[in-house]
Image 1 (cartoon, rainbow, N blue to C red):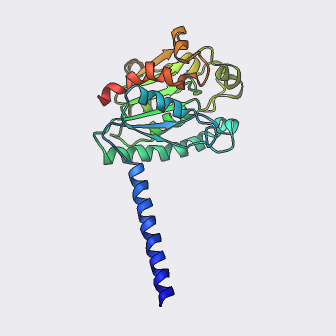
Image 2 (image 1 turned 90 degrees about the vertical axis):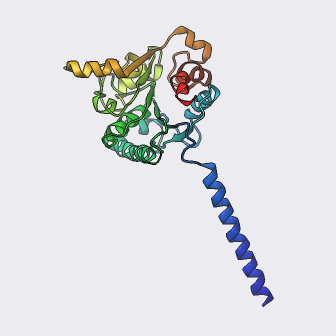
Amino acid sequence: MKGNTMRTQRLTFCLLGLAALASLAGCAAPKSNGKGMMFGCDGSGAGAVIKWGPSARRGLTKAGYQGLFGPFRWQTGLGVAADHASSVAYKRAMAGKLAERIAQHREEFPNDPVYIGGLSAGCAVVIYALEELPDGVSVDQVFLLSSSVSADYDLTAALRHVRGRLFATTSPHDAVLRDLVTVVGTADREASGSAISGMKGFVPPAGAGDNVRALYRAKVVNIPWRPEFANYGNRGGHTDVVAEDFVAKYLAPLVVPANQ
């Protein structure tokens, strides 16, 4: 009897411990704090060891962003080359899952500001996710950093799900885009030569009508690299755009006012 009692007590303590851990886990990852949600797609190769997104998150927080972050893992796990060269079908499949998360967040917290950002090939997933959003579901702002998507990719469908603007950083000094992506092709699997959005900026597709061009003028803001960016850690390199100080100085102000 005594042995059975001790076993029962141990089981009870274990169950209580598990319940406490579950409770703490739930508290550690709230779905909303009313200050906004920033969904993010890191670049190719990002995973357990290499991560570029955290420095951007530190920059936003440093500048006063008080919302939450929702990193989205789209990578194959097979490395930089495999991630970048993964098929459009694969990237769209992952983007569909991200779109579901965004739509669910909008449904549960309709007044919460929602932002989405991507780095390099992650920008393709961001664009595809916007295209996959249901009618009537939009995000507030979009950030495409060092995008390896074709410069003339048709953003029309994606822009219909953007309430504010789509900001895209560009740099002619980006060696990854200039020396590699021009050879292997863009993240949207186009052999575009040097016509890469992260170098040239996004432009309306060939044959675009007046309505599409007007949409681009209203929604798309290309941010060319400037020498003064170097003072804040952005020397024009591929991942310099997520430098903490650069994000705090130049990108966070595009988000923070909505949270004050």
